[in-house]
Image (cartoon, rainbow, N blue to C red; front, side):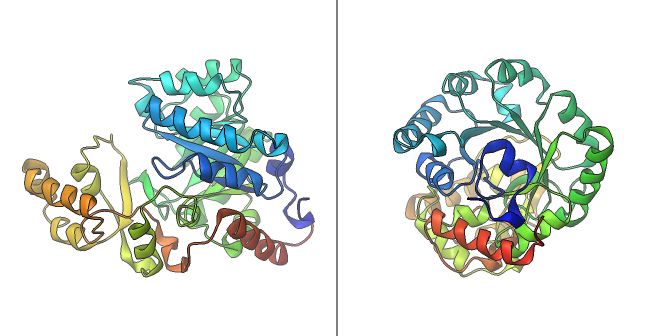
Length: 335
């Protein structure tokens, strides 16, 4: 049962018990985490990410299996993709649509080419944006939900020149939607890691929150144990947003997007000579690859946002969602 104070348009639309959506984090949000979040009453989105068909099939099938005897939770299972990668190959999206997901989330690119097939499959479209000027495109695509992602978020987002803060972006988009598309729901993303953040998102005008970094640091997450442990020992001062790890991982992300992760020793050694790194990346890539192989997170990356300073344990997802929900319900006035 949804806490009265947290009964929002988002919980009503998707039959949730809490206004939380799991961020579909590439390679971290697998089937076990998505299923656990759905069972906890949140929206569970498998991280289809870069559109790897085999990975997506394996993890979505796992979620299906875990939820096969729980129809209510299965109805809260969906998937998310990186939009510009779908432009190269959309077969993973097409496969997921055969599984009758409760929603499809698209981030980082133009969602409009995919809107018709998503709508035809009966799945509500969730579009993530980083700026107010991206909202009309999402509305044109028929987005049922818009996610306003601030630069505090871990992983990919808009760079420092183009990005916005969650605290200012959310209410501005809320006001815009109230005038131009009042039936479109809004989620806040970026820095929401506890009940205070969820309560703040609701007070800023959102219908809920997309939670990434905090759910990344759970037992069900596919993130490496060493990366999760490093996160519990890092303050919010300890992340950086840059192109460093995309270059090291051979990810050719388009402008204006870059990547926030823990600012480890390798990042610090490279961050002041981006031109040199781009021109001659081989040695740095070899060092990074060796770090990944060894589980050495002074070189390998840990994908978390500025909320990392509030992450001090690695609980089960259901326990964490209950804690966030209870704390938020004590802070938000009854509706």
